Amino acid sequence: MTTAQTQELDVQPSPLALLLLGREADPSSERGVECPGDLPSPSDPDLVARARAAKEKLGDKVFVLGHHYQRDEVIQFADVTGDSFKLARDAAARPEAEYIVFCGVHFMAESADILTSGEQKVVLPDLAAGCSMADMATAEQVAECWDVLTEAGIAEQVVPVSYMNSSADIKAFTGKHGGTICTSSNAERALEWAFEQGEKVLFLPDQHLGRNTAVRDMGMSLEDCVLYNPHKPNGGLTTEELRAAKMILWRGHCSVHGRFSLDSVNDVRERIPGVNVLVHPECRHEVVAAADHVGSTEYIIKALEAAPAGSKWAIGTELNLVRRLANRFAAEDKEIVFLDKTVCFCSTMNRIDLPHLVWALESLAEGNLVNRIEVDQETEAFAKLALERMLALP
Image 1: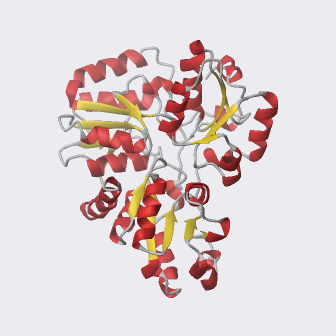
Image 2 (image 1 turned 45 degrees about the horizontal axis):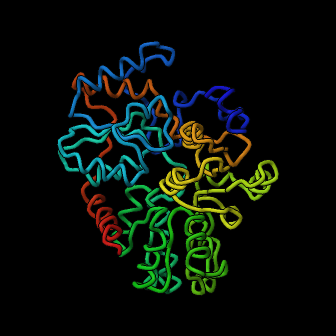
């Protein structure tokens, strides 16, 4: 991203944002990070041509998915773009594609593997492209939480609802315990369904989406919500607090959306009179409460498409998408700025760069299957059950 581009969006690059992502090891990652081959140099002037040639050689055998938060250098090769669930369903709708190259993060590739046929192979160009939110809830932690709920005598009243941004293991836990998956678009419908099945909800792993949906959209109070911290005994909650709660929120969050603050909203309103503040529901409750509009990534895109010429917008979501939308609608005289003053990329999403994509496509073109994401059959069965419950929501 150039200095001129960041200035257009009224942001200043932070040192962390300017690190070259995708090269260093991450020993704490459960996924591993070693690339089983030599990556092309990022300075190779032929990268675009190489990616195009490999993709053309593969033809209909490959289907490339690009998440909205992906880099422009990668998104240009995507056959379809969208949010995680839309992309997974798009992959399932292309059974003739032997290889699904998912330019997103690990949990998204898992979802694609769950929804596609056994003959299709899902590839993640960089195995270290994870999701900090999804990693905040492990299968062991959630199983321990369920034991706590059981000891409190309320497990039978609790229905788990897990956000799409969760691992296959968490989706499987949800399916096994009678729960459903939700997206940021249908979280309210998912919670309404859950409360028809039981008296309480365990919402995983994003506390903010759960709280915002319950309080902002469904009229509950903040007192109806408690925060379960997996790093504290009994989640840091008393038995009485668990029994009194309607919403048991997991202590997880998006590292991108969680950085937006009420100060960010107040500052942009002072700097840009008449600005419309539009944020993602993964933002903190006080940010959502202060915003003019709240919605999923797809909602944000559609809202800007429908916005009148000359309108002004401050967007609280990932910077790659905001920059892309600012460029797209500049000709329509729509002023679109990033809600925060500092650059805020999704660092793990950005690990998938053009060198990784070229390496993956060229490997597949040469007949070498690399970085396959494969969910085991038992986990897939229960995760699919939870996903099917979501698809059956009215």
